[in-house]
Image (cartoon, rainbow, N blue to C red):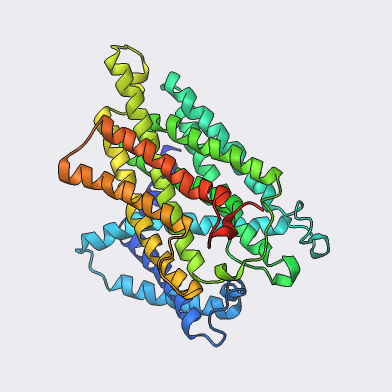
Length: 413
């Protein structure tokens, strides 16, 4: 039995190491290149309202398979001495596998969709994605409780349970978004099919997934499970807000306004939320730093001190989170300007959303400048991360709810 178990572990780990990981990585990259080539050169070209179905048509399978074969062929030409290339593949392959799992789960969920005759635009309550989103809500709330309990019982299994349920929530949320994308084509004869990043309810689901993925990655690499007691309550607060959004009818899939009918939406919005999610994790690290610092200054002998990461580690975790989010947010802002030029005829118009996005960019740009150029650390940066996230929340939610402008399509209806 021990030998069999060891063989299974060895086989699983080998899938993410060396040449096997390298070939799989380039097969995935080739598949994506095949999709891009199909969008640019296939007979039908890229059609905003039909590309998802193009992907899974016979033509799409041919383009993706061809790209994967080319990618694998390139991988076999790479010398094993090129360690960096192999290391790059070992990092990327788990993420690609996760994406494939989400797509597979979405495909499974479609089996539980009601019949076409029972699906109407006016009443979307029977769409199966609502059940998946509720599952995400429950497991992420449970994860938050587990992480808080872990602070008081670090030797129990509760911490691992918190991590496991957070990952389950990520896959539930990600596959639910893909399912909503599919469901958007079931309504009104497919006329409103679009990526599920067009309203507050949908992007909150995306935000939860991004926050968890960034945090869980940092947790595994830096042994910082105690930080989850600050990260997951932020997610929990967002979940209660999204439940309220659903209760007032904001969860329905609706047609896109003309300004959003663009491929830019699929790039600009997710990149924005990589930034928002990273800033949320930085905020949690800042709050944890302030809490631990308060305990240390008071001379407390609390067991919590042995569970929390050190002050230096928390400071570094906040910095790493901002370092992830700031480039993504910068790129999202640049692409947003390009999208604005295409949609409205100008790169910048001082719209409230644009103005507050610039404020957020300046806040975190100044954070990185203060750390790099002036070596600032400790309490000042901890408060900076916390207050910076409050600015981010207003940019994300407050502007949509209280201010009007060119981005008024993001307001509650």
